[in-house]
Image 1 (cartoon, helix red, strand yellow):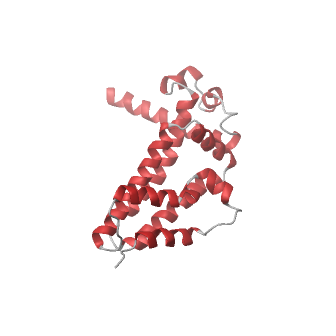
Image 2 (cartoon, helix red, strand yellow):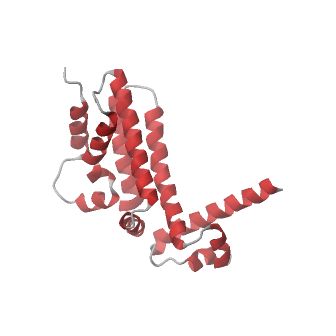
Image 3 (cartoon, rainbow, N blue to C red):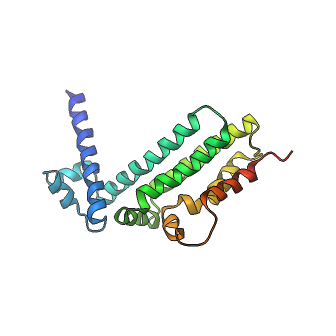
Length: 199
């Protein structure tokens, strides 16, 4: 019986997040209230608060879910066999594409991300650390196969992330879209050149 009620709880929590994300996309994070979310679900706001202590907690969970999708896809590319350089390029392009699709083309969702960044939520920090870790794993594979050279893996992954920030950070993707600068392929070529064996 406990398992059934646990399943219902998880299901209700997921439905709250699904509706919250839809409303954040439709009317914006600022304008969406817990009352709006409850009304869509035909439940009382008090019931929503049983699962999430605040609107900010709902927001964090939605952001975590969106970021988690990017992390899963990044990890999938790293786990795939094959030469490192094409996968490394695919990894960097995929992070850019998914962040662009999720946050930049959608003004309402972009507002949610901007607030998350301003408040420096733990979810954002954890996501950045995860992405840096995945890039570090890819560089480590390249070092092991002789395709890349990096005496300090942690530094190499941080430098690669910093070099790609214009293409990774949702606000910078939006702000730099019409500004002069290298293309994503040119930036990836630069990162790979910096990590290429010297001999």
